[in-house]
Image (cartoon, rainbow, N blue to C red; front, top):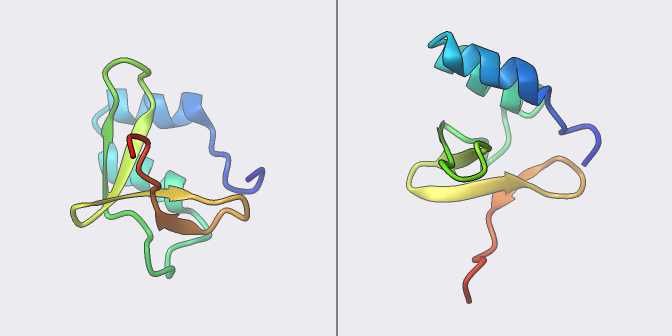
Length: 75
């Protein structure tokens, strides 16, 4: 997942500045044409980390950096 790791500080700064499209662009950089590339995101209030969505489905990058549907953390 090293290739998918984005600059969290830059991402946060873009969000604080109200540049949400640019922040999403930073997150999907290099993976724009994948099936589950996120179209929106929200910020988790507890962890302050982004949660990505494709439509109404939650997505996350796998080990290779490719976007996949998120596994249910509460089975």
